[in-house]
Length: 273
Image 1 (cartoon, rainbow, N blue to C red):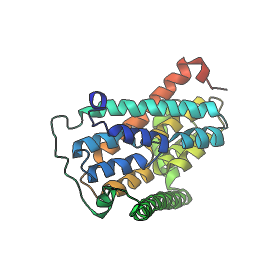
Image 2: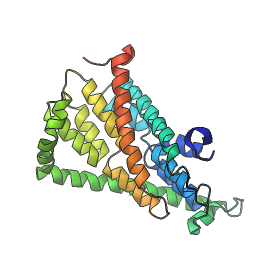
Image 3: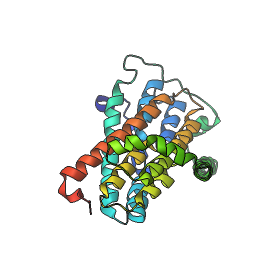
């Protein structure tokens, strides 16, 4: 981790869990690192930029199989998502390269409980706090999904999305995308990931690569809903949200480019009808 990403070895756990568990587990783990003084502020910001990702269960299972009805598409999206994640991590090794803060622990009741040695006498207390923390995170994620689904519905019913779509229409036409459905779906995905990906996957299109590439970009960026989920988690520490925003924009761009390359230059992934 140190030679490639310029972060401590414990960052491997954040990267692994961020890849296999999905949003926003990576951010939760990085925040815990900072609270317990395991990483400096700069190291946590580097980690945050590339360890908070969409998981294989969502990409392969939900997007690939349930939305596109093709597991190969899900595998392609997961491969390019992972490669984009690594690329962002390598780039962010230079984030605040010459600036290093201390590994001061942000002690609070939660971090103190994490540092408690587990024994038979306090096992019940430790388990109850762990379950309480996990349940709180799950409820927070579900709450954000519901909230932004409602916001997106309001924006659609007031024709706000259609108005914004007309502004971005010339940009999409430059890339040969003439169907307004793609613009509408992409903008929806910028707000709430799942809704946007579902809209794009359902658009009938002779060249399905367009649907796949746009979904790859959305999966990399994650959407404003996930951005606010991450911000709600990191706000209790001194970790800046700025590198995360930059990292997710880059992640979306690299995922788009890698998906385009795989579809056009690897025969097995040439999925155009």
